[in-house]
Length: 425
Image 1 (spheres, rainbow, N blue to C red):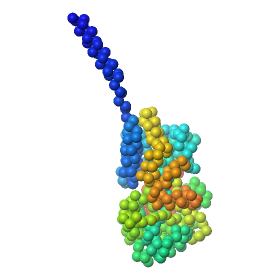
Image 2: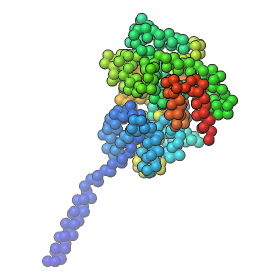
Image 3: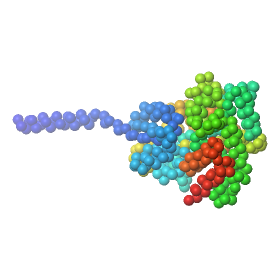
Image 4: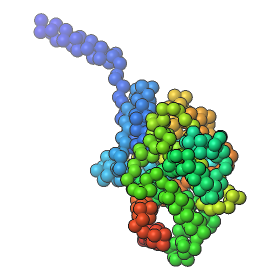
């Protein structure tokens, strides 16, 4: 009897083992995270991640957006300090340089060959590709066409602005039509990393030589024609600013609201601002970009160009991520470039101008279309991609002091030179 019981128990155990073995093994989900440095597309990226997770149940992608007012660079430094960096991090080109020694080698990825010319220059180290070019962006003077048509007394011709004098004339016409000419937003990243960088990018000897000249005192900024012209253009923006009596009081959101509602004709900003403008525009008006002229020479090509370049790169962490997480991160990046759903979400949902030649989709928003037009006609200036991480904060603060009347031109230029001299160490 005891022997029969043992046999019965053995048979039950065997059946249970066979049954367990026959049941499907649950698929393990690999969690990956993306640190987002573009707070204005937080919602869109979260929707993109949701779609990706539905199509790829083996992965769980989470978007971590740096809080407003906190740079993604600072956020990532903190994450590394605590030993828990994101799987992928989206940063400005200059900020990315700090982390390239922690990045996964992406040289063998298919999209490397499909990247636009010079799109990988700033994320290469000894010919090794360490970053993914996420977005091409551009900036200049965004215009509300309805406001400018009224000011011009007909159809506004964007090509008519090709000198500081012609921009001054346009602003006078806008003012006469009863609308404030321009919004000059006071954020340090806009003033320092974008507005000031425009003067660097067109220096005849190139940016490295220009910086070197400031550091060894061989260049006197007050005698530099481009810098002098830049200050005069800054004065034009300052004097025609809708908030000229309180130039530091407006916010980024105030700019999109003022332009979208037609309270200003121009706003110095980039195409990343489209969602904000659109949300404030109930009449679905037309918009585009004008260059920011730096002199009065109508034949100078820089007066007819806007700044365009790859402005965000994604790198995959190699220090704490598992091989599986690295592979899932690579799959996600390839999905953005080669899968139809990824392309459409990137271009039409996130409103990104892709940095890949194989993607034919053009964002539907007018600002991206305007940038593509400048690109196709060869009228672009290089985006200053590798400014030091603190450049915007420090030089932007100096420009804030200037536009609020606390310092004069000589002091502004002195502070810019002092900033670059401090970089020598």
